[in-house]
Length: 196
Image (cartoon, rainbow, N blue to C red; front, side):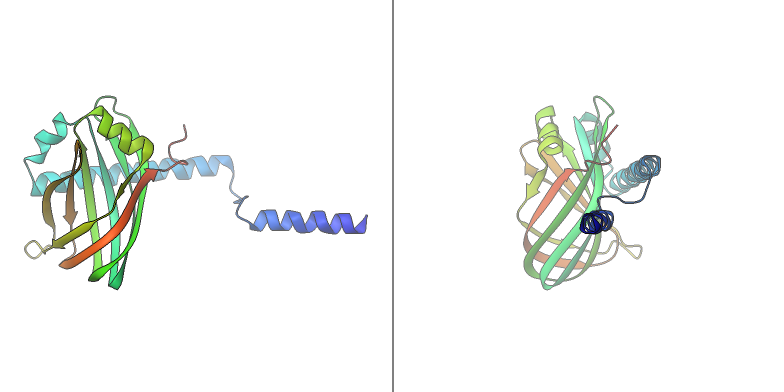
């Protein structure tokens, strides 16, 4: 009996410290998720304002598009290694529904610096939007140069077509970063934030 109590006790301790149980109530978790959704909506609105500031013609394209997705990303290039992480959301212009998403990438290539950038994807049609949101999306090659815009920073690389029916705008805000990398970037739904 002593051994059974010891085993059960050790299993309980392992379960608690394994991350399975965070110690937070369901109400606390729901509130944290609600606040994270609000933060992502605010960040998305700020990204769209930057886009309209540096590319005023994009406003009409956004209004005509089936939907769009915005991401705030931070990338680090250390000589031969690059990594990026970020979060964002996709917005369906037809239904008004937001889908909360994450992104991550890593790769090898030549570069040096830290780049805080925003990405705006525009989706021409339902198929392109649904594929991005439901299946995620992966980009495998990138070569860019982001230059400082006046003294305040901020530059816009012109929109490029990255897949059929999908265009991408990239905005940067903190200086000059030159890179030529081949990296995998994956975008996917945030399962926790998309719960009702």
